[in-house]
Structure formats: structure tokens, C-alpha cells
Image (cartoon, rainbow, N blue to C red; front, side):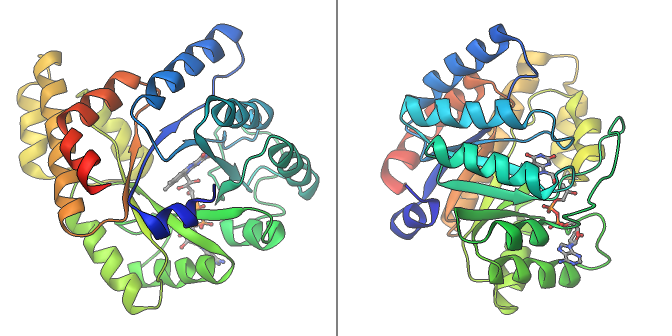
Length: 288
Ligand code: FAD
């Protein structure tokens, strides 16, 4: 089923997984995780795509497995490392696996990437234009503005292009301060972006991930939350409770203020998703 059709009827609950590098054991492990996630009745599961493009085949294969397990997959595609021939091959593979939804992205050049980057598809919009209407397409957006954009307004101008090129929904970068999400929804709405903007939440359950989150996505961590994390960084069990409860707080606030769904970045950990869903079972049962 197409994600825009789902969103027209209800709030969506979704998870993001990343495909294994190559080993069969890792793939089996991921499939076990996906089967556990099915118990939580997600509307879709998204599968990331390596920025270098090297895992395209396996990422598509995992999307096919998700479909076979009985969950709707959302296959990410990054244009940066790809040629038009790569995209043709991948989109044909996805079609043959019955995948109906893709998330069109540019990606960032990995440090070890050899060869041209962004030669054919400098931006997600170029990839979207090339792929056309073969799939139900979504795209990425950034509550705090994309790092390369001078102003949020400039970023939203580009977001509007994504909508014009067929994006039927947007999924946000990780954020820990909901006010950035509300600002994006408000400003994008004023500039004519009307497609649903699904907030992406990543429970921060380990203190060592703070630096990683900062460098990977530049997300601001509110002072109160940061203080809690730093105070209990040597107590992993306490840290886990703090991170899960903070995510729960973010989700309830987002739902109360009208978010069209929740996308959870779970780093392939079914336990994280299960614990969040358990804490929020009435919210997901009654409001989704
Ligand atoms: P773009 O939309 O191209 O935006 C990049 C910058 O260019 C922005 O500043 C934007 O304002 C500007 N811009 C956009 N369009 C134009 C235009 N037409 N003309 C001029 N400027 C423009 N990375 C991966 O490698 N694999 C993944 O699977 C993956 N999944 C992600 C999922 C989500 C939900 C998000 C939020 C990010 C994901 N990323 C992934 C990271 C993403 O690839 C990087 O954040 C990258 O820097 C930008 O990708 P984009 O598609 O937003 O690029």
C-alpha cells in the first residue's frame, strides 16, 4: 500500500532499519528483528541506503523481505553515488520485489568513497525528477535546517521543490527539541508545503551517542536533557530509562499537537521499539 494512502486515513507508526554489510548471519539477525517489529503493527519499515551506494542490492533485498513478512517497506535511495543506470537497475529490482514506496535522498559523500559523487544527481530533487511517478515518493527534511543551507527559509524553498516534484510525504531528521519541528511545520505551511511531515525520533539511550548525533546530524540537545545524560553517563541502565522516557515525552507532545505519524530510528534494536510501544500502548492503540 502506498504511504500517502495510509496517511490520508490514519496516523502512521514506522521504524527505520539499516541493512547489514554482507554476512548472512547479520541478515538473518535483521530478519529476526523485523519479525519482532511486526508484533508492534508498524504501518511501514524504512530501509536505509549506504551513502556510497555499495549496498544497493542488499538494501533492496531487505525491502523485499519486509514485504514478504507482511509489512510495507519504504526503500531509501541516495542519488549522490549513483548513475542513471544504477538507478534504473535498482528501481527495476524494487518494482520486481513489489516495493511501492521510496524515500529519495542525495546522501553525503563517505570519506572512503572513490569516484564521482553527485555527478548525475546533485540533489534529491534531481533524483526525484529522474524517477518520476513510478513509486509513491517521500523525501527528507530538517527541523533545524540542513547544515548546508544558510537559512531555514532557503531550505524550505528546496522542500517546496520536492513537493512539486512529487514528494507525497516528508520524514524529518532526528531532533530532541520539538519546537524545531513545530517551527518547520508552521514555516513550511506558510510557504505552501502541504504534504504530511512525519517527525523522526531517535531514543538517545547511550551517553556515547551524543557526540555522534551532534556530528552526524547537528541536532540540538536541550540543556535539561543533556544535564541528565551527563549526570548518569556511567549508569547505562539509568541512561536507558532517561532516553526512553524522553522519547515517550516527545512522542506524546507531538501527537497532542497533531503530528501525522511517528517514525522511530531504532538502530536495528527491536527492544528499543518494543519498550517505547509498551510505554505508549494506549496512545498507539487509540490514536493511531
Ligand atoms: P538535498 O535535498 O539535496 O538537500 C541537501 C542540501 O541542498 C540542503 O541544504 C537543501 O536545502 C539543498 N537543496 C536541495 N534541493 C536543492 C536544489 N534543487 N537546488 C539547490 N539546493 C538544493 N543518507 C544516506 O546516505 N542514506 C540514507 O538512507 C539516508 N536516509 C535518510 C533519511 C532521512 C529521513 C533523513 C532526514 C536523512 C537521511 N540521510 C540518509 C541523510 C541525507 O542523505 C543527508 O542529510 C544529506 O546531507 C542530504 O540529503 P537530502 O536528500 O536531504 O539532500
